[in-house]
Length: 213
Image (cartoon, rainbow, N blue to C red; front, side, top):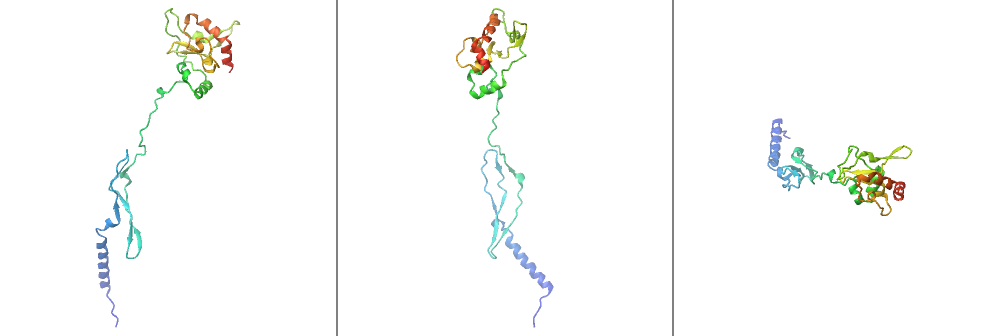
């Protein structure tokens, strides 16, 4: 006659089997979870060496692979992607293409930009320092008075406060060959005769050619 086990016996048997399984896993997580070796800090990047990596567990008994999910706290990861220091660009170190002092050192690209933008005039400067003859720069020199009574602006004329000199914008940038006169070269500060200097320059063939380029 076949004997049947009671329900209580079956529950006890199942509990013992479960306890055996639990004991086999207890303390054995090191087989399944691998601790990452401490990483050497590079720059501002640091990783908590206690973070656990997820590795598969290969059950040799049934050939099945199970994955044990371990929670990784992202708060422990401090990664600074900006490892290289930021280079602040100091605008003051850049060459001012509008400054006549820098015109001789401009490349072709800078000259093209300057030609497109045109000369820049500091209208806040009304007068310059007096020379030994007590003459100086004034904004009146920017205006040309024609014989018919009309007035026109000498938009080609640029004053350098640092050098206390006048420069011809067109002749310094667009001259095809060497030109005579300080306005087309190192600048002019002959304030006593500036009116005549400007008239002679703006009626010269070289200046007219530079203005029409």
